[in-house]
Image (cartoon, rainbow, N blue to C red; front, side):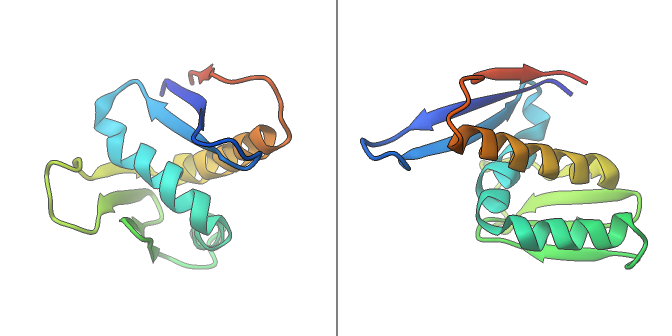
Length: 126
């Protein structure tokens, strides 16, 4: 899954930056948006729900953000927009373990961005 992390500067203040993740395959548009917007705002809650399923504490879970939701299953998670508008993007199905790893990776990249590490743009492929 090839992806590129970039930093967008949208002002003059030190905190006027945002981490943006884009997958090279358009079928992951909803996943990109989920990581960029929902994980950015609700990381502790999303991490907790994913971890509970991955570690077997729960059979399934879900999370609803401002724009996107996830339905977390033991094997697979669906990422989808709350509004039924095809122009936003199609739902994305991803292995729950893979999403868990991506959420952790995204947070690590955001931390690196805020520390000022000069590594962006960064392409990762696995």
